[in-house]
Length: 194
Image (cartoon, rainbow, N blue to C red):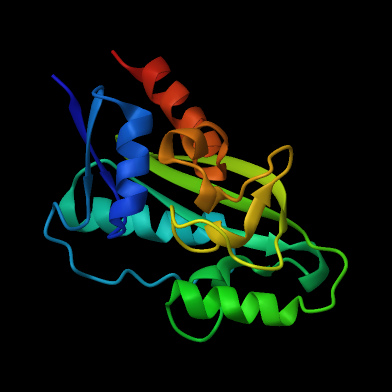
């Protein structure tokens, strides 16, 4: 029988990515599945802090083991912006607006090195654990591809000719920042399985 774990997100794309990565060992529920419609405040100044705020909220209010991630894009020439503000970089949530704002700030900038970072906070049996994944790449001048979400259409990972948005979910799940952090989480969960 698979164990239940809550992924503290309302984002169905992220939930599906994680379900594919975890397989049938765990039943991954998201905030919608447990009836949580709260927009959990992300008031910390680090990815780890925001991830911990979200996982703690679920455990405290729903008494179910939970993991949460906070992810973002860090662009070297912009002092690692948008960072923790990736989802609201243009002022409000909106992938197209955020991407347009980023490309505007990078107009004429030669150094387009960037990285996606994910930090996962797991609270299991009242213990807290952190897992991190990073993928390096560059920001393209124009968005290409229709898969994924967020900055995927402008992020080209090092060693690839396509953006994340030009890859199918299976290919992206092999290399993404979330996948790298999730592999660490999965390895840990398997190790801890009794």
